[in-house]
Length: 155
Image (cartoon, rainbow, N blue to C red; front, side):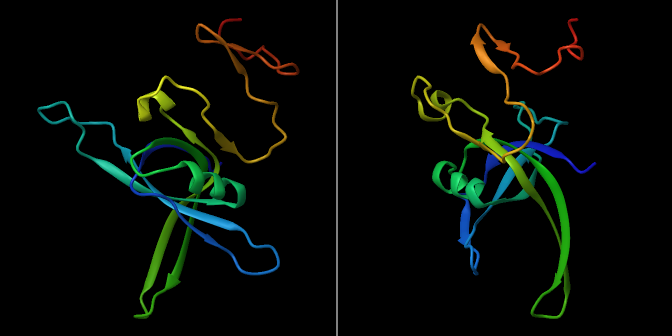
C-alpha cells in the first residue's frame, strides 16, 4: 500500500501552472517542511526537517493557489511517486514527490491570523467513502449513517 500523511509548513506560496490541451488543468507544486521527531537542542527546538515536494491537480491545485501561503501549517495525504529524467547535461535525475488526494489547514484560522476562528475551507478529492463525521461540540463527533461502529475502541 502506498499511502502517506504529512503535516508541515509551506516553504513558499504554491506554484501553479496550467496543462496544455483540450482540457486545461491546474497543477500546483509546493514544498512542505516536515519536522523530524528526535533530538532537541538546548532551547527545546527541533533542528531537523525534511522538505517534501507535493503536487496537487485540478480543483485541489486551485484550492492551494487560493488559500495556501508561505508559513502555513497544512495536513496532506496522498501517495509517493518516484520518477526520473535526463537533464540538459545528460545526467539522470531521480525525483520523489507526494501526489495529493487530500489537503487541509492544520491550524485554526484564529491561530494563523489572530482572529477568533470562523470558516476554514479544505479540499478532498471526490471518493465513494462515507462523508466524514461532523463535530457536535465538546470534542465529540457524530457518526454518519451507514458507518458501522463495531471497530470503535470503546465498544
